Length: 164
Image (cartoon, rainbow, N blue to C red; front, side):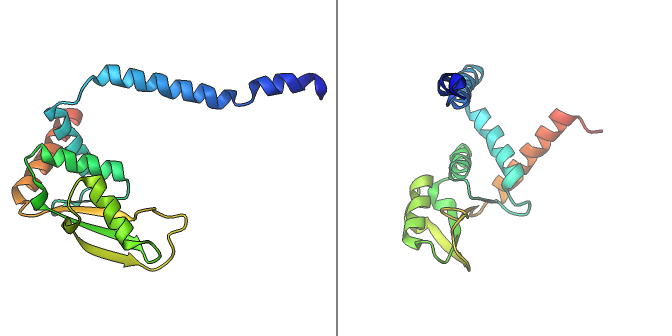
């Protein structure tokens, strides 16, 4: 109806703008709550990420979220793990460009392309799936690191839940 057109025009996009403002306010609050991330914080993040996405028998971490995998690798560096200890594998669809996928993950993880040593090509098309596939990060000679991370997870459990 004509009498509501102006009101409708004024409100158009209001929900998006409100949501944008709320996200910006949340970012400001998060920054003020966290202020900075210490080495200890990175170890807690490492344990949390590994608890959720790592394998439970060896130091392997698998995910498709590039930022999550990058944060995991950055947290590994807190334990003095170097690039030469990393072995990276990618799983991607047959219609994806292998060279582009390798370049993407190498750039994302700040590692040489030569560190990406294994590839699993999945039959099917990429459409609607993961743009750069999944990335697996494995640490060589990781027995002690693996035990340390698992012990950190156990410590977090015992401190947070206080199981009998």
